[in-house]
Image (cartoon, rainbow, N blue to C red):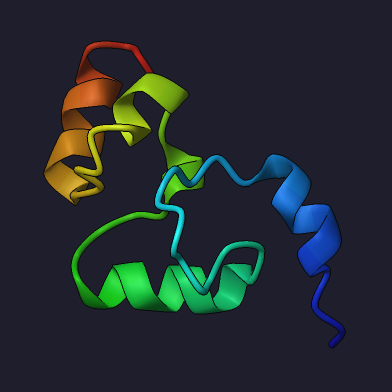
Length: 67
């Protein structure tokens, strides 16, 4: 399967600038799931900027109807 990095970058809201996985979704998801996290694209922009990508943070956002 061909990576669609250029297309993926248009939707990527990751604010971590030195990230080597931007636009490479399969690598990003694998990396974050290993750390019990979700990638930036699962979070609204304001929540993503906190860099707290934990499952627990996501659950709080869902409970507050922010996702």
